[in-house]
Image (cartoon, rainbow, N blue to C red; front, top):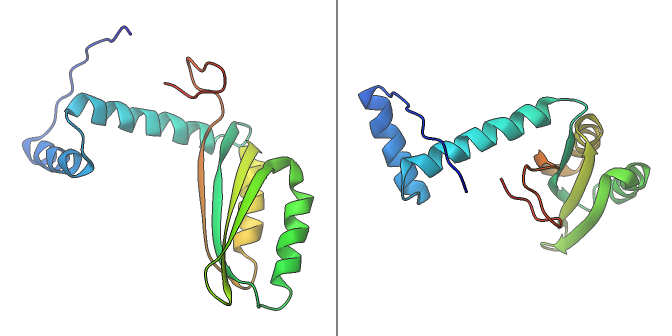
Length: 145
């Protein structure tokens, strides 16, 4: 792998905080930490583009006994079947369920699905995590940068 060296200037206080953060996160050097920050910024730029292609997960926690919620969730998932690759459902306790949806498609469609689900009465928490679908240097379905 060919790498290019670049120089970055930090104020001393910012560098102290950055070094503390990367130690807590387990980085062995500043370069990898900075590369990860750049990768994250590039992914965020793609996921901010309404037409960009994304893949990710929507994790929700909900009360399955909330009036009609299970039916509404099922209806929404069927309506958005092209954005949902798979789902995993776990019974947390007698009333609470955790569901993870693997989602893909255009940003606007995936976000609309997530927003619609998170807005349902009885959904206690929802978190959408997205990344771009195509990575430079991707081979046989593996995502590399």
